[in-house]
Image 1 (cartoon, protein in one colour):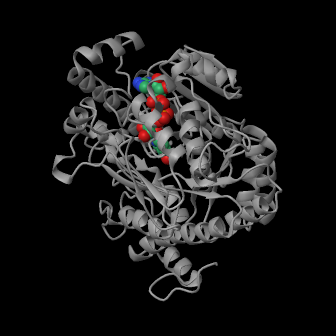
Image 2 (cartoon, rainbow, N blue to C red):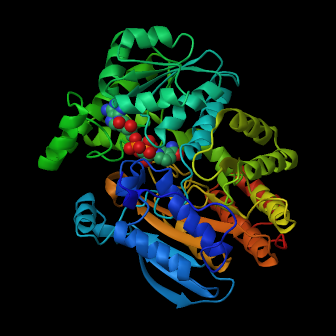
Image 3 (cartoon, rainbow, N blue to C red):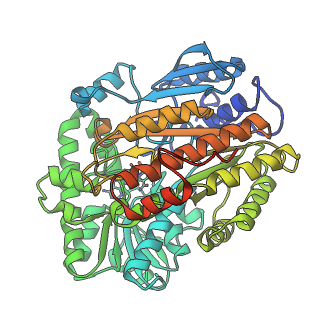
Length: 544
Ligand code: NAD
């Protein structure tokens, strides 16, 4: 990487911008590149989710954030800043839209063509709006998912159970640790030897091998990385009558061209051939995904708990002719929805000072104020297992009311000077109100509303009028087109009364709308949370 493309997030208390709101967003823009998978290309995660459209846009974003004054709002279109407008003091200081193409035209081909012409960018969920905090962001998601599966199928404990999965990329690299935190054993298949070596270096894998037999033997006592192609390995294991307790996958299957290496191709061949014959390579990848899903169906028939973990593998396999692909469960519908009904989802905080001591103070506060044992036990596990990546950050699934209460307590700590710097709050888009993805988050909605994207758009509108600091509307997903619509939000707790107001309003609005969405769709648990929290047409007073 050249010096020109080496980015590290600002740390300390010195401001380069007009205030902490602008400085916080600038540090996050830098941070997603610092912790990203291919910083030299501005690629943060998920094969090609980018932080900015190109380097020129990156530098223009930095300059714009540095210049941005109070009562101004910066407008960003697909990773490129386009204008600064006057706005009220309580308005967002950055609004973005990323990857959106109007309905009928939202095809992968149109997206790729527009992206090649430098007109649009795929921002993933948290890359384009600078909210990615490294592999931890998905770590708790995978952990919570394994916990939910364990409660449903294994009496609440995965101790000694074997998990088979694949992919050790930006998100996938959370898997070995989540398996270990759950007390399970595991085999993680990864085609790129360097990714296995990285997970071994981080201490998340106990060993690495390229032999299926050796992997099976090593998985008797720990979590092993298996260098190989998931399609070939899953087929071989299913053919040998191996039935792991849990089977899933986190290769970047949503992207048939860049995310999933076809069987029979080396990494170098894959990279070379996709430039020369992209359509043929995508077809080969889909054929391999079909093989993998066929094997997953055999595991399921043999008694394994099998689910897709939100990477659109089933859509690709179905397109390649596996008519039963959707007999593999979707993780959100099966395991995560009950949490979303309570507004519980992937909330995050970031210590903008860069001081690990601030994170320790925040973790302590989260532990002390938590109303649920799950939160305490997660914080303990995270402190034990999760190393700091970029700016010190914590992912912590909190629900409606929990997020605003915690953020307000943190804002008071900042105000009292008990932290070295302000704290930034954000969340994954994959949240109760934040996303519509009919094959991932909103699959199989009880009232048939799975594909209605009014909800994330309403969420973004509501977050804007609630005064969140950054509000984003993203689209894309599989093939980068048409499959998903989502809303992102970031708010800085700088210790001021204005920040307290923004935090309370935005965080309660965000989770509140999520709960109402599930209540509206007929989920009894969401209705009861809405009733007890006074959500609806006659809601109780706001927290502030
Ligand atoms: P990534 O591109 O960083 O990593 C993908 C990894 O898969 C790479 O290391 C690649 O070498 C490996 N791989 C590709 N083909 C393979 C094959 N045939 N066999 C074995 N390994 C192979 O992507 P990521 O950031 O890790 O994301 C993975 C997926 O997770 C994406 O589809 C993303 O959309 C999805 N995702 C899910 C959630 C969730 O909440 N469940 C959240 C975010 C992302």
